[in-house]
View 1 (cartoon, rainbow, N blue to C red):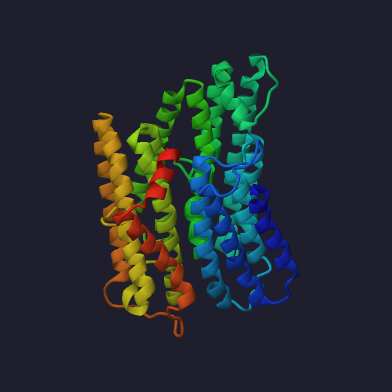
View 2: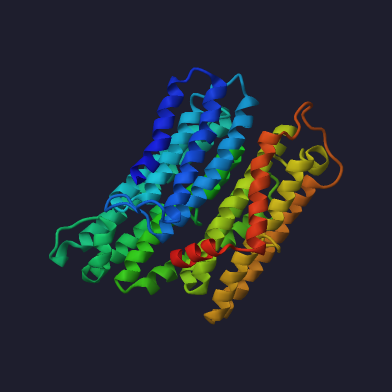
Length: 467
């Protein structure tokens, strides 16, 4: 059954090459992703078998699967309206690449073999690179090559990490395997020096895909030049998948009795990510590059939550959900603003709320949400992480995180408020908010508002089990 979940978007990608009609190919995206979301939900609720030794689901991967599938469905619905705005461009590249991207993410999430996980994560790079180049200009080709080169170097380092993990099992007296459940069962017999080295390489390699500082340098260019829906999938989907890959290493280190060491390394990279994001968000005039540095910030918060452990880990699981949905709403709304003004630079984008009442308002609401303002979901998850930090008596870490979050709020607020408020500059005639381009970001913002007010019991249970 899980093989069907992985194969479904791949089959749909093949069909998109055969279908000769532009509109039909576009609608294939939400149709396939709706079935994918239904199957993902049934798996997460336990109505379908959890899989086998090669591909399967546990509580952690079930949470990531539902989040990425929900995000992709919203972006797929948005893609129909987006591709209608570009009838002169053949969607024979974007549609199959999006579906291949969904298939690769699904395989990475469900992989129970670390080698298969590595292959799937590399496949996400290859499937998403043409999406970044969709606008086909000088800046987008530069961003695509930077994305390919940096992420490929990162994934090569992750492969070395997996080889070191395999090498750590040589002296255990059992056949060496990268099957994750077998590694967990024999974790106490693994060679500690090789296991530690393997985890460091996995953290650096998959951390490059996740966008932890100082491995984040591809993000501002890729997010800035990619279409809004692609930025949403990278910031909310791909980063969640890469975070899951790092957490597999944390699970292995914990089973081997070295969980404290793994958490300390995550905590250090998380604080550095928060610091880098705060510095570069102050005075940032490009609204999409601003969202890229915001992504670095929230990857840092996820790493800090797991690095602290306990209650903060629960907060990190909740923040994974909030970040994905909020980034989805922000990037889609930012894409609408960019099209209306034919620019994403603060010097040309002013008064977006008056020009695009829905998209401008959603972008403003998304800013309040992503910076941890109540009553939105990210406030609850960030507050839970901070409770975990202070509860573990890490007073200095807690005060530093609060200071950096305040800096981010001020830096991001200066740009967002200037872009959305005040007198409107001239926008492109004829472009206005439309239902297909607004329904997805609206639903994402409403969902995080609901999570901030009330978390349903099934979701609470899923978060606790994942943590």
